[in-house]
Length: 312
Image (cartoon, rainbow, N blue to C red):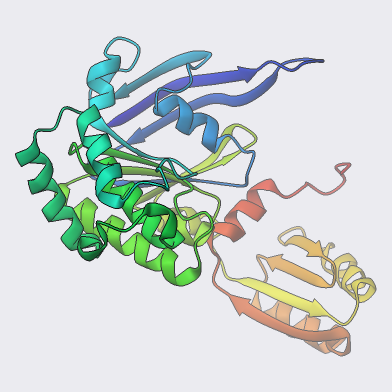
């Protein structure tokens, strides 16, 4: 459904050299998949999203959506797309019904088609009894659902979302994602979303981690986490100074990857023998320790860790 080949993009600065926002991006998103672009803010996610949405022309490279090259078939490609932007694109002074009717007119939906689509979608989003409410009076979670219904009114094949749960509390986030999965399964949608929240990306069929304009890893959440290949040990020393002493002791083992932040020390690659030895020799310096399965966030930290001896 989405094929991205060699996308590069540069931003001009008022002074100084240009900044490269995207560096040779290659991605394939299969049809009916939920694909997550994740990574920290400023990593290039929103730039790539704007290019996919047709709001920004890439510096170089090729994008094909639904088998069509965006630059050659802009109108046809745009009709394939439903877009949920990071910030609301609704008129708070209008009702839900009025906002949706305006959007339907932009896609030339007839009254019968509009009503039929609306009836189907409102049943799934819990908005059926709120059509006459002004959008400005709705909670953030309900506004995001209205955005979603609006984006899907013309029945696109591809849904693009940019940080769709920004500003939502955990309960609203969970409800929003349940709605997304329902629409994906019911309509056979392909979904691409950006998110800086690794726990959200973990729900996707496929994930690409984007950092400083480059793709660091790409695959299923399970396969990506398996790259670490082992459980992690999280040590909490009594003070940052004692954490440094423990780090210096463990640094002699080349098989270990160490990352320290304050009094917390993450240890990758440790065997049970290493753990037992550490507890015997340095147990009095530890406040607590835990063994945990690695996550996408752990993988990101691992991939972006500063190599030993590299200036920070």
